Image 1 (tube, rainbow, N blue to C red):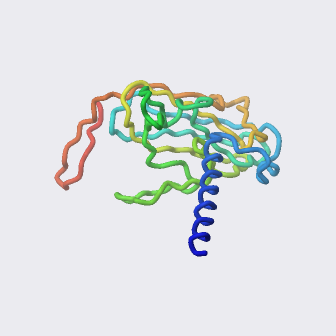
Image 2: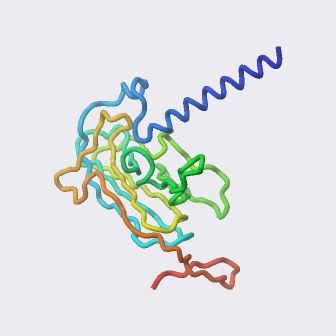
Image 3: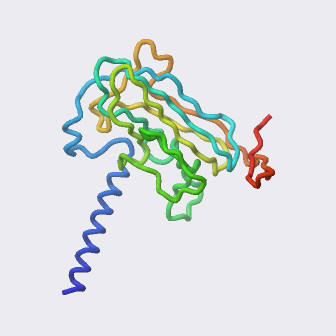
Length: 223
């Protein structure tokens, strides 16, 4: 009986993991029929993209930040403002890329290692932080910050480290909800559209560094 119960628990865990994997694989959209999907309002929500920045020139092992600032330019509360970092379907255009090797089981490879993701309250990491990155959504490439009232702004910031040399392309898109019913549209005075991309090159030459008098490693700035 004990073995049978154990088998049932293992089978239930496998089904649960399969469900999470299926949800995560949806990328920027959740399967229809979810109760939260039914609660999301239909409509267009004007946003003003105040800025979108990411360094074009990168170096291996060097940290950098990608930041997108979004303001609710309409009169209605945005249900769940979020940003998707991905170019369409498949791999590519996100922090992950695909290897050219044909004899690997998993072609997905990191292009940038994400050290910090956008959160409502900015997380301040200690020098060594073993805790996993918080995720308020099971969507792999979508980063929600929750409701946004009219006139308020939300700052999306990713701290990343380049780990793959060569050209890169990161696509981003601002959304008003997670289920496709609430749509973000650029306001008339928005200087930037609700979607865009960053292109650049990651140099295979690592940044220069030296040990300071206090024993800490100092990354020298480019000149």
